[in-house]
Image (cartoon, rainbow, N blue to C red):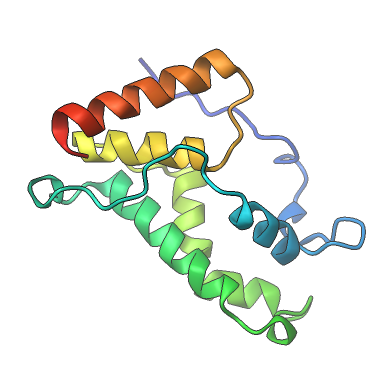
Length: 146
């Protein structure tokens, strides 16, 4: 089945990522999202036997590690003038790959990390879909130690 990209809300607006929304910067919005707990989503590292390289899982892990670097920057260091360069130096490249050139999952670990990532973002609007993802993740964790 072809992977047909679907534009996200606001994707058609060039430069939307650099915009200040009302009085909130993208940093504040990201900080708020990062503060939301991933309710019921396991975040432990996979078992040693399941650590083979997987392009999707590795990109997701890089995204979270680089996002943590960005969030650890002193607040006064991130300004309208410096934000774009700081994003490019931290989570930007991994985010770009996830957004526009999503790497394939080539293992069950990649599938599990993709499900965790979707659930952690808390953007699944249909509860039946969210419950289905949680059920699939529970199976991967139980049966495959992921």
